[in-house]
Image (cartoon, rainbow, N blue to C red; front, side):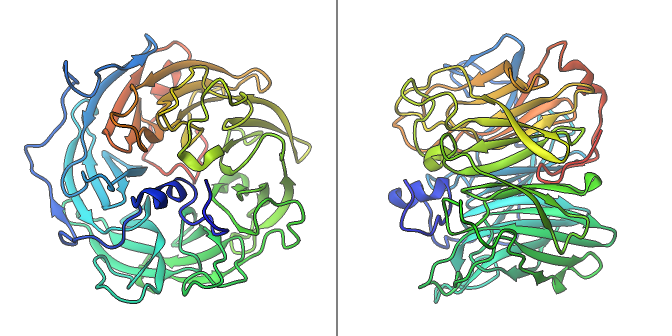
Length: 460
């Protein structure tokens, strides 16, 4: 499903380009559109977002907030999530939204910022919000006028006023930013930018394209952010499936480690010096892995779960014709400083041929002494699974909507656990809030997080 050699918008958007869903700049509503204060969610009712759902008995859908205008068009896909205090931030191809989740059963839409671009994956740190833009634009600001598409990278917003986020600057990066990872260092925030490339004929993605770009953001003056390094973390790339670029990096600053999913390879990194990451190990799995998509450490930093986005997010790979080791998760144990593969996990429910389904974004659930994750699987829904026994991972709960009417790209893009609830960013259905009531999970409810960005792990 990949188009040409660029991996542009990898990987879901390689499919979307075929359907014209990766749109150019659209109409801009303004830097911030205040929400209707009366809009809030309620428990799903008959005929609503829970119709036709299959789920385990221990999972309950407590709230669903549908996408709201101007982010409810066919091309306005919900994407990634970040959390801070009583707020959730939801990326969308049209921009991003801020929700008050002080009462998880009744999330309230606080504001929306119209800023159309592909991806718009979001992170938050202090009063700063960062958006990944992986699509050439005519300029760095939201709603740039039509013209030569010569900019892509990171956009920065001041979110001190949640009702009115304010654009403060941008950083151009080669081949844009498909995803990004924060590595805080006091009053300086380092950001690892991951993107596919190169595209020799592109104005924004010239060759050669190094695997990581490091952006330095002074927190007292974020508008002065700049690229400070472009480390090529394994220059030979003799065994890589793709020429260059990484899809996703997860950093664990306390452990001085990061795990990078670089399309054709998995990489374990030493980030003692965040500007000069060093390769500790390069992994390949040409038999089972197609697209190394993302990584998650366990709390002890002794395991890494790598996921494979077979088909780029647009194919039905959760069917009887696709082996359980493909489009799945691989569990690696870290033994004497080296990762050793132990097992695979894939959802046990077969999906229909109209349902795009593959392993996608998930997070660790903070269960002391156990290794438990929640994960999005597009139209495969949300799965909660235990990999404490690395060789024998097992599912302990799930939530799965029926096929999206009329087919097309849909389902959960990201599913993360935050302070007692699972929040799922559904591409078409909006923001879901799930509760899991299970003895294994209950200890996690005693853990309170002040903020949460999935690609920057903290111990609990």
